[in-house]
Length: 55
Ligand SMILES: [Zn+2]
Image (cartoon, rainbow, N blue to C red; front, side, top):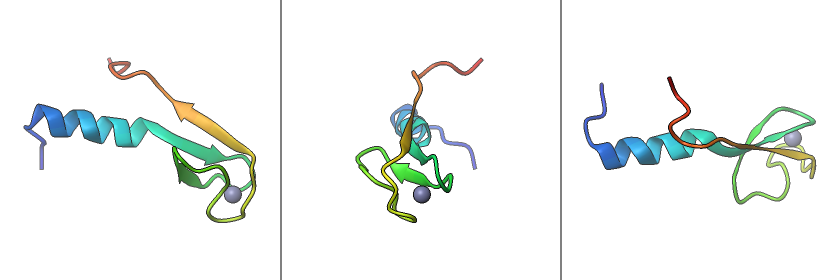
């Protein structure tokens, strides 16, 4: 189902791009997280890409 609403599409892209990845278990965590939800590790890698990087 394609998303036609431009605002919703932008929001969805943000949700996809703005998160942190745990270096221990690779679990995705919310951007606001300070430690992993799964293993409680504080080794989180920020995956923060600029919007519009898609070709
Ligand atoms: Zn983890």
